[in-house]
Image (cartoon, rainbow, N blue to C red; front, side, top):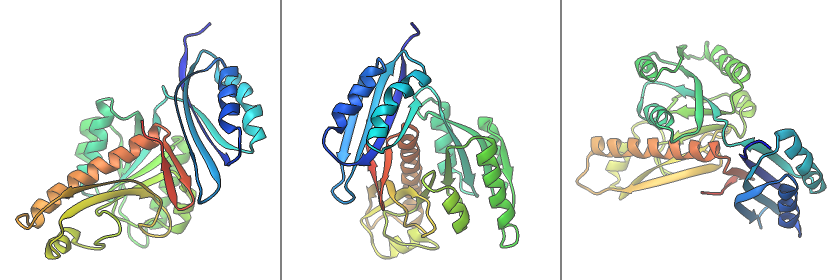
Amino acid sequence: MRDPQTWVLNFSCPDRAGIVHAVTGGVAAGAGNILELQQFSSQDTGRFFMRVEFESPLSRELLERALTPTVDGFHAEWSLVSTERPTRVLVLASKAGHCLNHLLFRQRSGQLNIEIPQILANHPDLGDLAAFYGVPFEHQPVSPQTKPAFEARVRQIVEDEQIELVVLARYMQILSPELCDFLAGRAINIHHSFLPGFKGANPYRQAHARGVKVIGATAHFVTSDLDEGPIIEQNVVRVDHSQGPSALMALGQDEESRTLTEAVKLFAEHRVFTDGQRTIIFRG
C-alpha cells in the first residue's frame, strides 16, 4: 500500500442532525485518519460548514468514491484537495512593492504553500523585484481605453495557468463588474484601513489629521461593490500623536503586507468559507 497522503475535505450544506457522524464515517471508509476537524453551524443562513484534514493511502479516485454517497446525501458543496499541491496564484500589482515582496519572500521561504506562475502589473516598476525572485513579470498600461485588454489578459492567464487565486497586491485599479463576477470567491484585495475607515487618496494623512489611535489593514474578497467584499483578515497597530504621516505609512504598509499574506495563507490552506456577506475561517 502507498504511503499516506494528507487531504483536506471542505464541506458545506444545509444544517441538520447527523452530519459529523456521516462525514467522519465517509472519511473512515476511505481509510482516513483524521488529523484536524473543525465545524460551524451558521444561525444566520442555516448552513453547516466543516473542514476535515486527514491522512489516507488511497488515491483521489478511491477517496471520492468513498465520500460521494455521504456528500450527495446532504446535497453538499464540497472539495477534496491534497495539501502537497501548492495553490496557483496570479498576482496583480502596480508600483508599491511592499505587499508583493512579502508574498514572494514568504513563498520562497516555504511559509506559503503557493505557486506564482505570473505577476501582471499596470506599471513596469516592480519588474526587478519579480526578477530577483525568478517570477515571470508582465506589464500593460491601464487606461479607460486599454482596461478591457488588460482584463482580457487576466482572464487568459487564469485559464491557461489554471489559476486558483488572484491577489491584488496594492493593484491600484478598480476591476470591472464582469471581471469581479468571473473571479468571484477567488480574488483577494488588501485595503489600507481597518474597514470602514479613511478611503481615497492619502489615507495616512487623513488618519494623522484626525489623531487616530490605531491604524490597520483589511484583506477581503473582491466584489463589484468597492471594498465591500467578505472580510478574510484584519490587523491593527496602536499609534499616537508623536507619529507623523511617514511613520504611519511605514507602520501601515507593514500591516498591509502581513494581513494580505495571512489571508492568502488561509485561502491556500483551504480554511476560508463564505457565508453570505461574511466569511467562516477555520484557523489552524
